[in-house]
Length: 177
Image 1 (cartoon, rainbow, N blue to C red):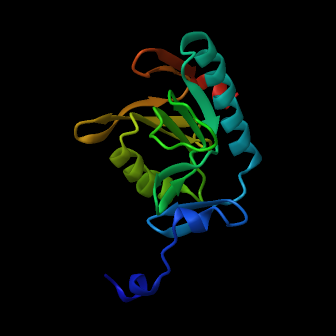
Image 2 (image 1 turned 30 degrees about the horizontal axis):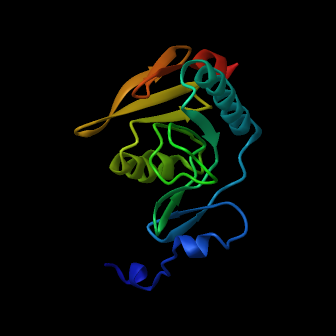
Image 3 (image 1 turned 60 degrees about the vertical axis):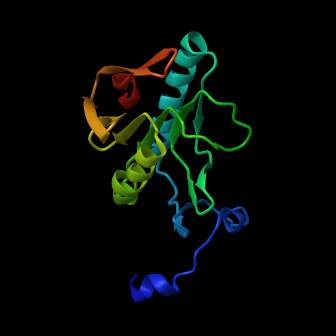
């Protein structure tokens, strides 16, 4: 362990609950969340709206949510931009969602593409979708026995997610409009 890590404070979910502002906690280290851009929020809203409509019709036991605490462990709390779960949710996620969407911005790119991806993979999230607003593209990863494998680059395409008992589709062309 490096000297710096030895002296860094380690925080827990109990600490996290009392913080002001928007944060994620990863391995006991707090990460402040930047204010999202208008474009980011618009894309999150569209993904939510289209998935909500699909789920109501095709998967009534599943729900879509945005920016909700996902408590991975006592020292790790993530806040996925958009997620689908087929578990009952009171006010936070306690089990891995079926699908996570992370909208990538320059300030979150490294954390989302590497750190959070590794956690979602380890926790068994079946699908991870990294959404790149500036490129008008989404990378879809599916969990395999060897970890995440990129299975699709969506631009103006429709993709169907198998939620284990039902399927839901998202037309990515509508997301960029």
